[in-house]
Image (cartoon, rainbow, N blue to C red; front, side, top):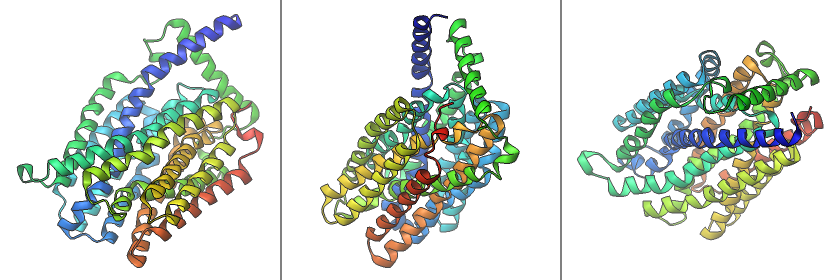
Length: 435
C-alpha cells in the first residue's frame, strides 16, 4: 500500500478509536475514581457524626486496597478469557451496589467490611482497561492513548470535588439522610447505569468493531500483530508462568507502589489538607480541589504526547515523579500560605499523574497475552497496596504531629525512590517501545 494511502488510513483509524473508545473509557474511570476516593470528602462530616478518629478513617480508606489486591489477578485473567464487555460490566454493577451500601455504615467494623468489599468488587477494572487498550493501540500509540485515558483521574478530581461539596452542603438532612450518605448514594448511580451501557457498547477486540471499515479493521489488526511480532523478535515477551519470577515485573511493581503512595496521599487527604489551611466551607473546599487536578489534566496530555513523539518512557516517568516530589515539598514548606501550598499541590498532582500515565508503557513493552493480563494485574495489585499504606501512614503522622507537613515530605521521598529505580534499571533504549 502506498505511504500516502497508509497515512490516510492510519489517521482515519486512530481518529475513530480516539472518538469511540477513549471518551467512553474516560467516563467509566471518572465514575470509578470518584466512588473510590469520595470517602475523602465524606470524612469531613462522617467522622464527626459517627465518632471515627483519623486512624479509623485512614484504615477504612486504605483497606479498600486489601480487597483490591487479593482479587486483582484472578479478575484480570477472567477478563482476558471471557472478554472485556461482560467482565467490565459485571465489575461496574457490583461496585455500584457496594458503593451505595456505604449509606448504611454506622460502626468502624461496618466501615472496614464495606470498604474491603468495595475493593474486591472493583478489582480488575483499571488493569483491565489498560489491557483493553493494548487490544486496540500498538506500542507507538499507546502512551498518548493511556495518558488521555488517565486524565480521567484528574477529571474525577475536577468533577468530584465540587459535586461532592454540593451534595454534602445542599442535600444534608433531606429524607433523614446526612450529606455524606447522599454523597455515596448519588455518586453510585452512574456506575450502575454505565455498567449496563458497557454490555451493549464495548467490543472485545477490533475484529468485532463494525464501526471500522473492512480495510481499516484489517489494517489495525495487522499493526497489532506486527507489534506483537516485534516483542517476540527482541526477546521482550514473557509468559504468565514466568511473570511471577521476573525481576523486572517486581521492580515495576515497586515503582508503581512508590508513585501510588503519592497519589493516594493526595487523593484521600486533599479535602482535609485544604480544610486545615482554614477553609471550612465544603462547597469552597470542593472548588479549591479542582485546581491541582485541572493543572494535572493538561500536563498529562502534554507529557504523554511528548513520550510518544520521542519514543521514550523512562525519563518521562522519572522526571514526572521528581516534579511530583518537588511539588509535595513545596506545599509542605509553604503550609501556612494557601496559594503557594496549592501551587505545590498542583505541581505534585501534575507530576504524579503524568508519571502514572506514561508508566504503563513500560510493562506493556514486554508483556503480552495472558502474561499481560496477569502481569499488569500483578503490578497494579502490588502497587495499589500503597493505597492501603499511604492513608494509614498519613493518618498516623497527622495524629502524632498535629499536621500534614511531615507526611508530605514522606510521600515526596517515595516519588524519589520511583524515579531512581526507573533511571537505574529502565532507561536503556531496549526498554522503550522501539524494536
